[in-house]
Image (cartoon, rainbow, N blue to C red; front, side, top):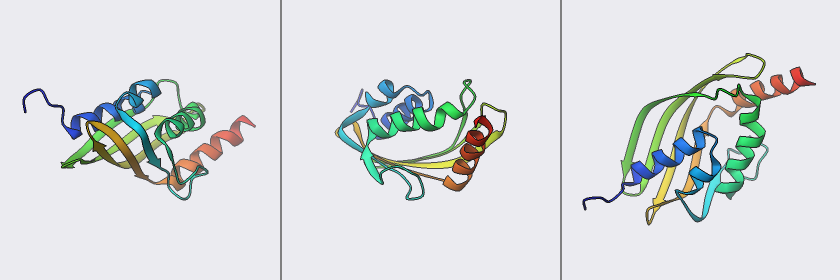
Length: 139
């Protein structure tokens, strides 16, 4: 149908809000009750509300990085029906200048035109080691 927004467009718009640390923008693409699934190795509930997850990431993780934010390089976007997978790299630096480069795959389900679940996959060891080094430098 002409004018209909695809699951891929919705997922990418959600991610852009996330990458911009704009929780409200990202949430505007989410269904009520949308869920986020954290990796088991991270100190967060395995599954939680997307708003809670985004706010925790922005408050706990993104604050450790340079305020200029991240450079995002999208490598692949694959969508089938209501499932969208986005493979990308994030490049940036911590507040004390340590470089950050990590690869991600976001698996996003879109239901009735809204994001209903987000399942990110990344190297959490690299992320937590870098954030622990940043915390130690502050302390």
